[in-house]
Amino acid sequence: MKAICWYGKQDVRVETVPDPQILNPRDAIIRVTSTAICGSDLHLYNNVIPSMQAGDILGHEFMGEVVEVGQKVENLSVGDRVVVPFTIACGNCFFCQKKLWSLCDNSNPNASTAAKMYGYSGSGLFGYSHMFGGYAGGQAEYVRVPFADVGPMKIGEQVSDEHALFLSDILPTGYMAAENANINEGDTVAVWGCGPVGQFAIQSAWWFGASRVIAIDQVEQRLTMARDHGNAETINFDEVDVSAALNEMTGGMGPDCCIDAVGLEAHGTSPDAIYDRVKQATYLGTDRIHALRQAIYCCRKGGTVSIPGVYGGFLDKMPFGAAFGKGLKMAMGQTHVHNYLQPLLDRITGNGHASTGSDGDQAPHDQSTSANRNNRGFDPTYIISHRLPLSEAPDAYRMFNESKGECTKVVLQN
Image (cartoon, rainbow, N blue to C red; front, side):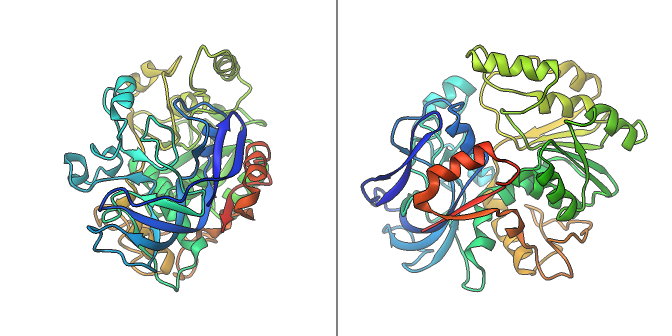
């Protein structure tokens, strides 16, 4: 089969590789019909996530058709259309029983490697380094899905691939970011980063009852998308001082909730951003945390900082004193995707708008944005800028990495 393979920094190739096989009775084989390049795939592309190996198959956002199931997979049949969570979970361990799916104790065969770095390992992830299991990803014609009796969700024929695909990662990630932000009705929410996760965090903030959403980025096309589709006010950090602007916009109080949807490759021109870039380029540091520092600094006293952006290493010059001094609450982590699949599919299909919390809680408010008008259901496809065949993935990666204005989201189709 054809697959997108990683060979080093900014070197991905379309290669012919062996077809996946059932290795465990709980496996399924999926024929991938649609997959996407995630912003966190660019961390692999830029070689800032450790333990990748030449030839690794990329991709953790994908969906497709079941073509084979293991003997113990009773919930799926050949021919079913499914979307697959990027986090792999066994369904049986202490953490899965608590619905903390991305912390599964049994799905990472290389858990000892992750434990050496983090103390304990999270779950295995598709196509995201050997530290998180070394699983082949879904940017391929076929993929093996472990624990297929737990993760994949069936999708009806009335829902298109493009409407369902983002349930695999970025839509639940943006939603959980808003949930973690502890938004109360009437709150002002600031979102750093207007990539796909940031756009969906903006949308989700309205669902949780925000009265204002302020989006921060430097790419004008993405800020325009946040205004036009997310009904957000915007700040271009190349043009104004973010801290001063937020202070003025909130009457000196600061945003109630701050969401860092940027992660470890933050951009900026301030001294701390330049410091981060030099340290990362010289292998003296791991993460560029300018956006996170700013979110902590700008958040109002007693507020919440939610961190869906990916961080991988040891954070330098972290303003923990500011977080402590202001009594901030912080929440972060890989997304517990399984919790959000059905509620967010209901959002997309227009069924069950009022019940979107991971535990079934009612969202208190539903702001009408252009992506979610007249109760027709939420249309997540507005973030798609390019639809390309799998064979053009190397060019797609290069474009996504270099042209963030023109390229917001690439969907690859087989």
